[in-house]
Amino acid sequence: MKTKPRVAVFDFADCEGCELEIADLEEEILELIDIVDIVSFREVMKEHSDTYDIAIVEGSIMRPMDEARLRNIRSKAKILVAMGACATMGGINKIRNQWMPDDVMTAVYGDADLEGNPLFDVFKTKAINEVVPVNYYIHGCPIDRDEFKHVITSIALGKKPEIPRYPVCVECKKNENICQFELGAFCLGPITRAGCKAICPTHNSVCEGCRGLIKKAETDCVKDLLERYKLSYEDIRRRCTMYNFGREECGVDE
Image (tube, rainbow, N blue to C red; front, side, top):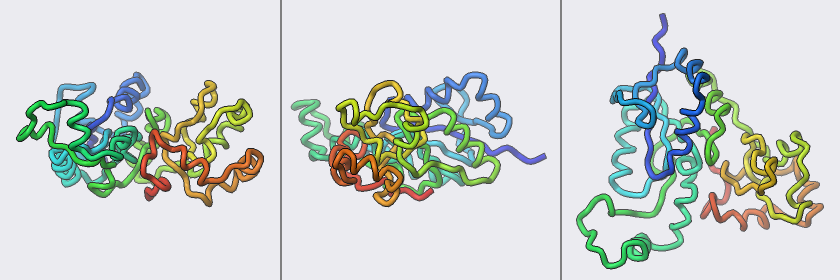
């Protein structure tokens, strides 16, 4: 009988919302347990093991102690999966990179004496792949549960998971949504990676780009939309200030 791959879930600087999405799979998680052995997952279980094949990491890296811990996790894992916007691209936490870490600490903690405390020893926020090699990415804030199941199932079966590289606009059209630009709003859907089922525009909110930016060449399928509203890739990219601070394109290998 083939041994099931051992899976461990870890988190760094994040809200742990992506881990809650896994927990919210409820009975559907039984399908995953059939093909993987979850050996560590602080959010939902007391048991812990330092022996695992697949490490799923949520959150961005903010401190030297986080970087050291991540490198240790990577050294034990055959496969590392970055999960959620904070892990895949630094997420909202990267907004603070426009200021120096010392200035941020002073703004938050004032004149408190934090010297020598490793908990407050911070540097510029980093995505997981800025510290260690990443094998696979699960995008979003939070992740899509169905996509999570697809990625983990594919990895467990030795297959490469298929992640969309076309814009959210494609999914909006499938959902027969009225374009947010047509409603007078500014949406990042034309340059944001699909895979979320266009959940935000479907509920009348603009896309904020939490799944990362596709490359300029991959916007050809919505070229007519850009022309209609007299927009370019660069025009929209400059508005990517929430999830894609300091990023040109998604820049991840899949």
